[in-house]
Image 1 (cartoon, helix red, strand yellow):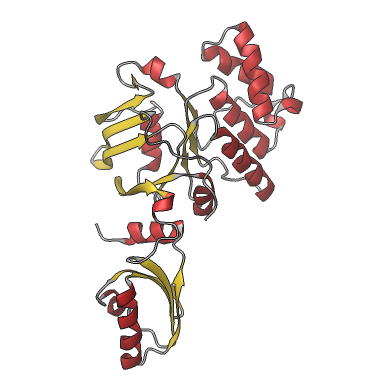
Image 2 (image 1 turned 120 degrees about the horizontal axis):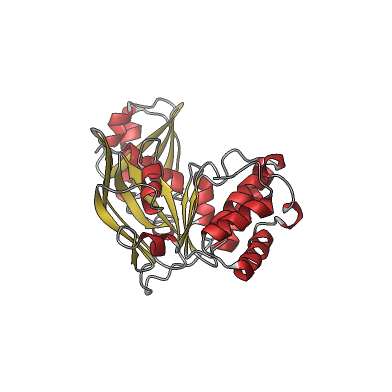
Length: 317
């Protein structure tokens, strides 16, 4: 398993505590009683299919949207009762960076620093620091509109970091970037994880497995999994993942009906990913021979984030 970008420190007080968050839009309930906790040094991957409530969660945590129920505390400050102090603890990069293309990089970052309440000397030092962190030293005098998408994303990160937040929220930070730019942004996130806690929302599962220490999966506005990546990666039975290939495969339901099989993922052309106990796999071999399914391959498979994601989001609720 790729090493996580940060080591969790559960013995410390939580940096972020969200309790009972709910949000609806008209008759649509986008989020149901969400609880979330993030400790210093943790990098949390927020996952879920489209419409699961990820964007709503990020908008609530960043203070851009009010929950209908629940509370949020960031580094001890209540986001509803002490919003300015709470927001000073966080930096936010939405999926579309909040840039002013007609401004130069230095002008824009200077404006953001002023809005964050930094004085002249602190503002100058902050610009130097974030430009170095985000490798923007050579583009300070350039118009933002003239920068590549990758550099614009760096500027977006710089504005989120300029006040040295304790919590950094990133929404799809590598979307639309080429492979070289993706690698550069990922390296930057790894380095940032040494300085602050991070919530990362993305559809790129390998990115989460490479960068995050913990993962929360949403489905239809509810948490269906929450835990450390190490809890499922490389797990042993019961519940081990298996690769199954059959020449004459039955209906998926026939496999799901076997005792001890907790999950069946169908990949097509007789290929399946199973989740089950060792004894159940032995029974599968016997049943396959009796039913003449034409067993070609049955081998243990290291659990991946994709396995977990498919298992918890395909499950009936």
